[in-house]
Image 1 (cartoon, rainbow, N blue to C red):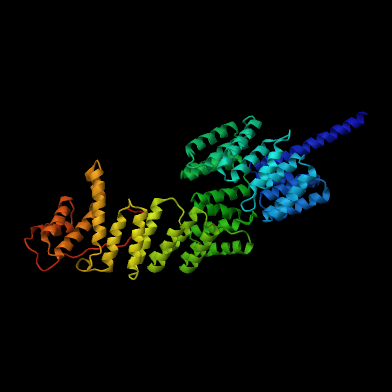
Image 2 (image 1 turned 45 degrees about the vertical axis):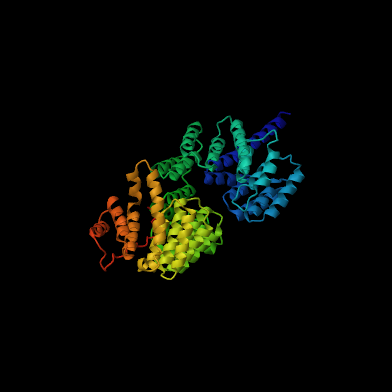
Length: 571
């Protein structure tokens, strides 16, 4: 009897150790110590190749985006024990990773039906699988259905609440926001407010709202750092928050703390190199990437190497690495095409660069920021004096722009109009664009000046001909008069418009001079003097005011030069 008890105790002890080892591996993953996690799961499979151990090694590969490696482990797990259902969930996740959502759902639904929703781990990992990968290889709504069942179990863990919170957040539906928060709060309570993972998830949710308070989030992150100092990802998250605020020294300092507390693996150095790149430390990023080349096997390594090389002016090498990216068959991102465009620009292959920028835009046309890819094309065409093409491209930006940025919107009308004006064959189109710009942004009165400039460019003898510039100049003066009259500090308000008002006065002075209406011409000359202008325009006005009669000569007309693109400054 004693012998049986000892065997039983040995079995129980062995089972507990095994469970602790699996838990240790999962904990390493939560701490982003992936090499250590991999080592744990590999040792478990090596020492005892059970279906469960194969599953968790496959789980590691799935979460580190190695679909084929994951599939191999899950299949071995099924060979070891067909009744251990987690490996079927693993194979479903592989299908999700490869874009087969229907195939994944069929497997998951069948496993849940077979286990009658009584296996907590099946529900937990199935729900997690649906939210573990990027769109379109995810389905948060399916995850919610499954995880709502999981949290009903008596042995529910904080992970179920965290995954459910993530799923509600991923639906991007405002009404699901409170549900996400509630589940993160349940996860915190489950850990007695000591889990760095649960605490961080709750605070991190605030980053997804409108106008997040980064100062408050940073404060809460630092509180988590003190409550759970062993939760290493919090140091990385603080670093990334500082990077968003463009406080790069603080960002680097906290990332160094993250590295000091991590496993110091090549994988961590790889993540650090990417962080350095994203914070604009291109030279240092390249040094880190070169130091770990051939040590990390991520397919994306070539991408980041190409990016860093290109930013360091090593165009030919960057092209070689981008060729590897293209040959690897991995999913391409807009930034890949942007890098290829930058390489083409460096080689002065402009049309090739434009093709790549259009591909970058076409990958994510619903992303508001993607419009900047088209803007780069327009700016380049403008700088090359390909004005008609530039005008059409700026018009395309106007039509496609979803950014709620007034400055950006104004600039596109401005440069579309000037592009057509400078082409010297699209003056009417330029006038139309400037008029549209003024209609959309009526408080940006410079559009009236641009219309006048365009009409003067179209006909240098405009004053003596149709006087087409007269109407926009008069409108500009009338509108700015209203603003000056309303202002408490009239002199300060006048200063904003003095130069353009002088141009309008000068034109109208010349117009009435040409019409032989000296009193009216003097009226505008006096306004130039009264508004304290200087330079040649003042001298011209003062000379005209001295006249008692109009001689045969007429004052010269004056026009404006076009702006340069890419400066993002409008006065």
